[in-house]
Image 1 (tube, helix red, strand yellow):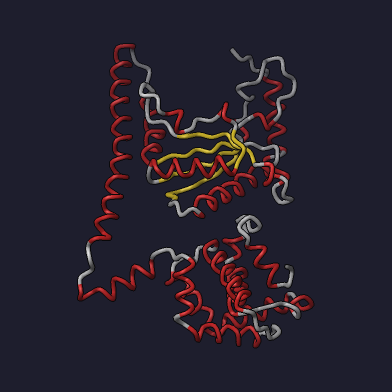
Image 2: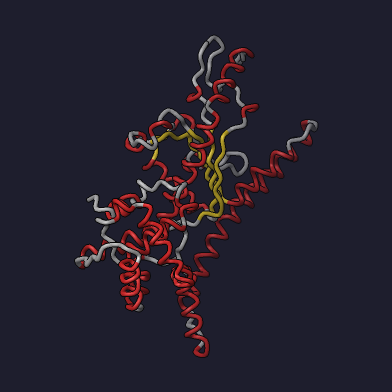
Length: 366
């Protein structure tokens, strides 16, 4: 039995309160990092949240010995927690592969999906990892201050979340006979939830297969095709096809960049293609990820010459540097997204996502 020294607990709590802002900041940043890593693999996230443990809940690490005089905050694994809710068990397995390749895993304090295969386990528990930043990431200046902070990652399907939320409420003070009956019913309910998770996945896969095989009706084929194209998250080829089908857009944004005061720049084809690649990255990162949203954004930039005004504002803010900038049509739109969607982008890992590289490139930093 672990004997907790109240004075030591208080000391730990005090140290935690002193660094609380750091832990809250880390919770936000690592949450965004996890989300970016998952969405980059086109895995749909139902919800994701991250938080730092409230100071009143901080106690000594479970593995600490009663005679230890200095318990490090880094030894407490759940001071920062990120919870990801996914739609299907298959998505959990995919995310596990990402997590194991991107972070350092403390296997002694983690419960992987393979650890849940015991047929006699109770309930419908979720996958839980204790993680730390990898050496490569923690060596980056913007991540260095979080090097010694571990965090807890919970991966759950929505039905596992239902179990985690409801099952503890059934833990009532009852006699042993009633307890056995309740536990047996809980086991049956857990099995039903697990079966439902697998059943929903099977139905979803079957629905996708049927949807591909059923042709659209002739009277609404054009409308249906337009709707699907507009609402589906685009890939690089779809976005490129959109710009290729609108040749006037290229000349329009080229002339607006010059009108805003940027020097005339005629890019080589390879350079222009690379500019497109960076535009694709920033649009996806900023959440402008359907063709209809791209079209809407560009139309908004045309209204009252908002795009031109913003480009002028950017040029004037960097008056000395901008005289040497290389602004092609794709780069002009890149700058607008970076400027107008900063509230979304500022919490992203722009270095890791290669957005900063795209920005530096416009400024002539190769």
